[in-house]
Length: 328
Image (tube, rainbow, N blue to C red; front, side, top):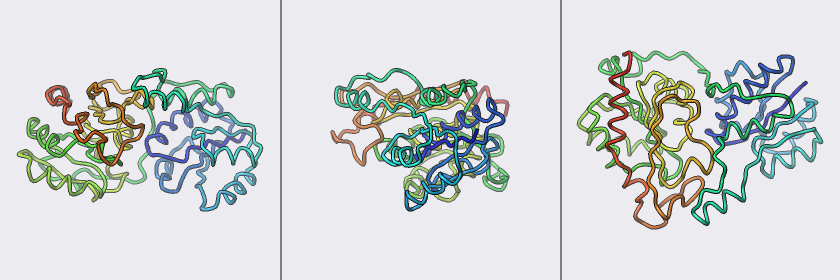
């Protein structure tokens, strides 16, 4: 068989497709597995040994459809389910299966502030889309394969060589990010080397955190590409992060993770840490939470209690225990 798997975005959702691709290739060893995504996210599959070919979405959907037709696929697995994938399936006529987004239940959950979505992880929902192919979940973590070799001693100061905590302070939306003052407070209580990770959009946040923290802080925000950032995560003793792609990718390395949630909740999207042995999931119960599925540019109520009221002591205790039990 020749199978095309489709997930166009976003980073976290794509990284959770890696168990599907791995199991398709290992359980159907004679099959040829291809994957279609946006060019922005090709780095997530560039070096994946379970993939035979990576297709990138073209500026024109008709161009993409033409390429798909030329490949002559036997089966299509739609793990995105949006208007573009519907058009692709309709115009190519390829036999297919699609994962259930549960859009109505998510919408009702937001409006009624009740969790009506069954507690099934996104990975397991994805696997339902390949059930007809006889493919089952191998219960292994997500995959990430580095694009290049990295040397820790050239990336961090010598004082970090005995161990550090990776703190992912980036996130696409404001309401997913913890205020700088709370990040600084946590860093000061830990008093352990900390590497701040995120994109250029949070570089100014990182600078403030670094300047106002009393411990050893290395600011890698905006100065390292994703592959290098993932490497820094993979070498950390433990990880603290918000609802963002890099935090989800960290699950590939089974590090103790503090998963911090503000305006969003993991149950709504089914993206709580997957196949990780030690997890501390932090969020506070509020009548206004969740206020969105993906985060907002500002708190609709103006108080941002979902982040300000997250207790810091459990985070510090969890990380301290991880440090004490680290082989480093």
